Amino acid sequence: MSQNKYLIFATLIFLAGCESMSVPQCQVADWGRVGFSDGAAGVSESQLANYTEDCAKAGVQPNAVAYRQGWDAGVLRFCTAANGWREGLQGNSFKVAVCQGQPGYEAFAQYLDAGLRLHRTREHMRQNSLEINRLQKHLEETTSDAEKHRLREQLHGIDHEQVRLRGVMSLQQLAAP
Image (cartoon, rainbow, N blue to C red; front, side, top):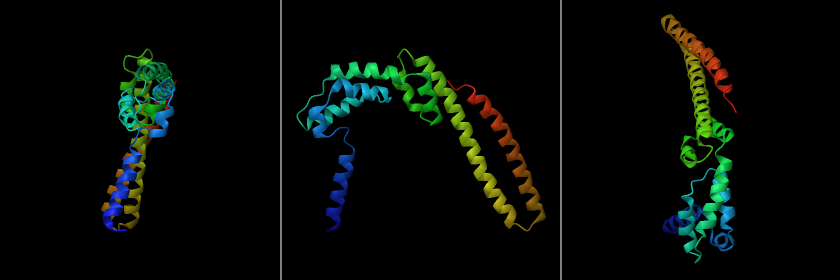
């Protein structure tokens, strides 16, 4: 196969992977269930536009009313304090928009924020651990006493910060729903 054929084949595979729904799925979709599933997963209701575009290829028009009714019911399951916490721990701040205007928005947003703070603290601790490893390796390799002293001071400072961050993390975990 020539290079162009490989490129065309790869492009077709990529584009197929971008579809929100396949033609056979469009033909048998229960739009209320699709909407419920999307809402419960925190998917924006604007996903319906993607379905409309993809299903047009099959000559299928999604039932927007059934989709939105399902989505409205599903999003209530998503916009909870527990899901806000989970999304925050994963660093997923973008899903807050899905819950704006929903009955559970305040609790979702509060716990999302708390989870995001804990996520950032964990990430900071992870970065510190990487820096400790780098500095320790450098300390083992250096022969200069002045450089060793400087590296030990840096390591000491990062160790103190890690202790502080562990305390912060303990307090942040108390916010879990």
